[in-house]
Length: 99
Image 1 (tube, rainbow, N blue to C red):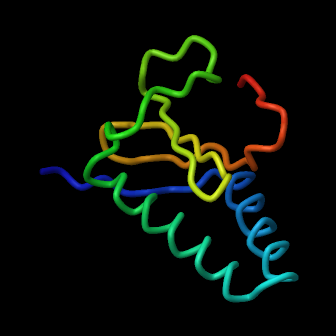
Image 2 (image 1 turned 60 degrees about the vertical axis):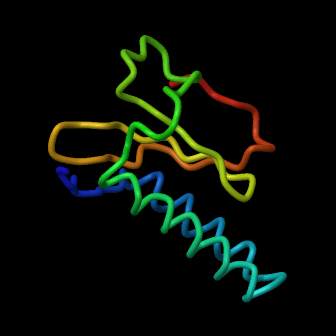
Image 3 (image 1 turned 90 degrees about the horizontal axis):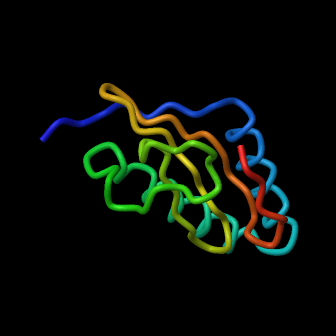
């Protein structure tokens, strides 16, 4: 089984970092739990990126953009031959945006 490299788009990484910082204001324990569980799920993508459904918000999606939701955060990613690119991270309470 091929293991792909995981790379983050800069805006997705910035949003994720800010989201964790925001949660940490209320609870450092919850922030760490959310962070670790989302990162663990992302790590699983390196070997099984097809586990999640194609991203319904990606326009003209040939199926290579996929997404999952965890702890009210939606993570969209691009599956390529050699790598997985974390394209977007958004809170599910935000208006969905096509891209």
